[in-house]
Image 1 (cartoon, one colour):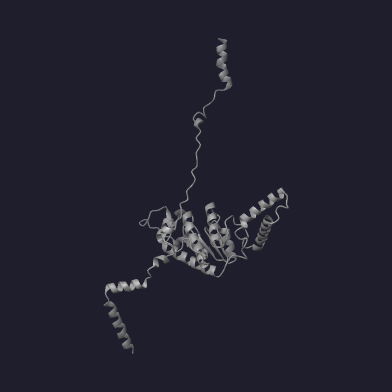
Image 2: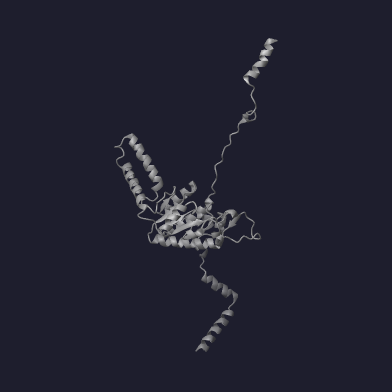
Length: 323
């Protein structure tokens, strides 16, 4: 029986070898779907365009990120900064994307955290609002997770002030109204993104684990998974799903965080913004810095000249009068 099986295998291999190259190519084309390029989460060209592979200066690197960094070989590149392995970036990005997709399908609380700059704060808020998630884009208050009961009291106070503003604010005096609105604005700034969150979050998405080290520490104490963009100066061992990428360039952060937000949006049945789209449809404008005007003091040249004292200027006049 084994003899016949071997003969069948050999005959099948011989028939396969006799196939023409055109038939082989045709069979391979049948296996690959025609729209396979549309299933790419993001292209390598787009990641390169936004500078996602650029790390920090070599003198600032963290040895624990060595696994994600291209070996320092002067024959390959002579840059002043480390370069991140593109294969590992894509691998970790897909893992985080799939994890967030499953979390969103299970109706879990997803919290986006980013407070580094104004651009990051606006980005975090926009992603959370379009994905119906929660966010913190102001300074991380100590105990936001570990002392959530006290934070809940502040959130309840915020809800009461919102109710007062919308219903019976006119019964207060003008001074009391100003005080209520100031208190409301302060609470809204810190807790507006989590005022509807019931209980602790199930997963955190962070743009910079070094800047948000307090959030990472509290999440680790409560064993809450953390997804973070880790630059070459970060510690990936404290992150559940680290994504080795450039988190200093706002274009890179915009692309990667929006891709993670698209995982939540697609799971909710909403359209994606960047995920599975061609490069032409992904438009991330370059952040233009405002020009600073320099005021030139035209009298600066004669500013430091010693002015004649009043007494010295009066002496020549007295000498002329005596003559």
